[in-house]
Length: 174
Image 1 (cartoon, rainbow, N blue to C red):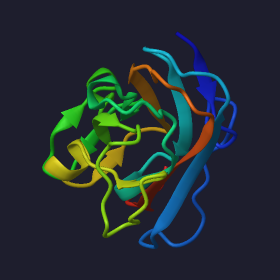
Image 2 (image 1 turned 45 degrees about the horizontal axis):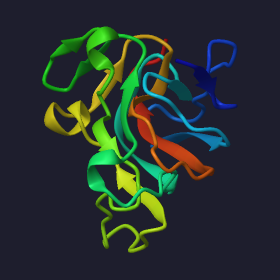
Image 3 (image 1 turned 180 degrees about the horizontal axis):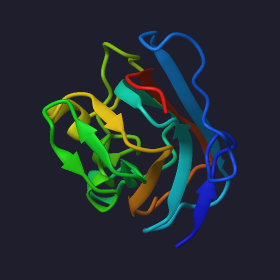
């Protein structure tokens, strides 16, 4: 179980949010996979400031896993490493937020792609979901890293890049 950190995330990086409080902002992190991500690996992708209201985003990039059988695809969760509250008032701890933005997503070649976003089976361009969609926008309670956890390893690993884009606005200033 390894931990990877994109250049725009991690405890030694400051979060950034400049501009007006109600202006839409986008944080992003990119990582290049050169070795097979394994079950339990964690990849820190993006750091958000305290008071960020997450409204959407996308996972984009290469397919990473070239196996042709659907049951053997690489699968990931996308979560938050700090407590947060949703628009309906539900509070989540960091432990329960491990799949706040995506749960058990397959990122191999036969994973679902949406013609609305990009009709290309060689890349992924999938909107974030999970608690974000079921309970409304997510308000961060502290500086928060958005991270990926590998649920199932890539069987036929192919090196590639993935980028996580997180859309938010500053609901409150720390």
